[in-house]
Image 1 (cartoon, rainbow, N blue to C red):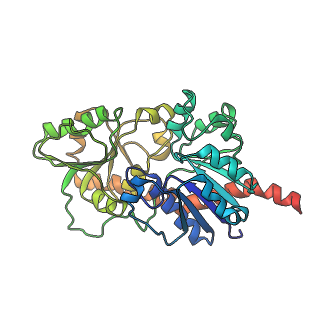
Image 2 (cartoon, one colour):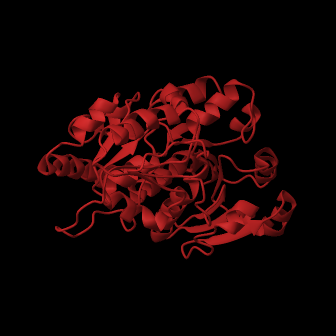
Image 3 (tube, rainbow, N blue to C red):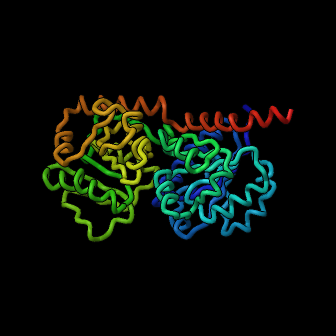
Length: 364
């Protein structure tokens, strides 16, 4: 297909502090750039991102930092030339931006929802922080980080014209196994995730309780926003923040990594997290709590391990290395065959063609 001019308004691409959006945009946009597309990324310049900007100038796109929506008028030509405009979830002043973008009548205007379970919960409760029901009907495409029945729900209940899944994905250049047969993980189990009140009970059950029971094993937790009242046993290391370029080493330092699906995600299901794909790509076996749709992405017992009790985790930690590494290898192959950023770039191209080919044909 012809190279596209793509404009993205997203939460952040320059700072991965307390968000997974930046990592997702980086890998997808890098893959699109490799396929010859030209991408301009608009990011609101916020104090939190200023303070923790780990990729201030991505080489694979033009990055424009703005302070207010009024500044977007300075880039009218960029918007006028765009073949595809994407507005991401959790973007400030999203409704005002969407109205401004609509004035340019881009051939394809898409909403990329990197928070679909949370978005639906907000819509249901009348919380229109970054998406209103009226906005949904303006988009030619509603791209969702969830798959499954939620796509029909978005179309039938909320009026999305075309709801399509664009799941999280990994860049194999950044997430891959370590090539060292002598490598010995420092931790029996690790967890990477920001604190949330609804997820903490499961973290207690699947990591902190096993840590208290097995004092000879070492554990690690990394993520922001954990309150000072959290009790960390002596054999649990807590690290507030690990930058994306350090994630690979973090996963390699664990015999197993823990994935915890939030309650809001379990209500929707079919939403594999970015961290899940990252760990699998790095060749680290994953222990997860059960969630609807899991088997669509990984085969339980064969590519991933499911735990509901602390005892389940303790038993997995005793697994022989040959069995542990075989599970990890099968999960890694699944990711490389289906869930890389190159796969997502191709999917996005196909979605664009579905929207724009009939329009182009009519123009001829």
